[in-house]
Length: 167
Image 1 (cartoon, rainbow, N blue to C red):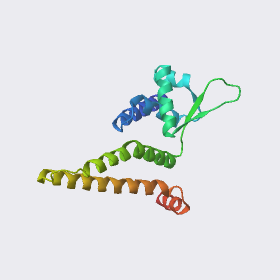
Image 2 (spheres, rainbow, N blue to C red; image 1 turned 45 degrees about the horizontal axis):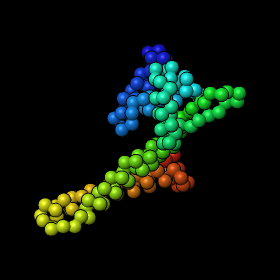
Image 3 (tube, rainbow, N blue to C red; image 1 turned 135 degrees about the vertical axis):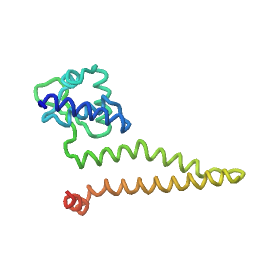
Image 4 (cartoon, helix red, strand yellow; image 1 turned 60 degrees about the vertical axis):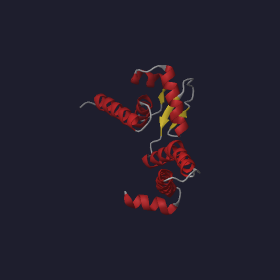
């Protein structure tokens, strides 16, 4: 397999995986392209490489920057904007985990807390509903707390040491 074929296969596969993880295919493809590019890439190069419109590229780059996994880079003497992705995979995983928690887990916890604390006639069906949603809330909260602890490990010296040993 030649380099360009391998690069294209990686970008296409990362795009397909992205759509399974809940982000759009183009956003994942842009991230893949930037991740494997040794230098910052201009929006025009992204558009050309992925065969997408300026609006599509712009919207998805903005979303990736909101996630904190893509950065704008300025080059001396250039009017164009250049973009690069987070290259440190540990840092990338932490940022994605934090963002997914904020966007997905926290809203789910809010709903579970709300629906598990309903008042009413206390029928058998309602008691069962309340018990199950309370258990689910507790489980999701524990999972979110574990995720938070894991992402915080990277912020302290002991956590970094544990991660280094695990590698």
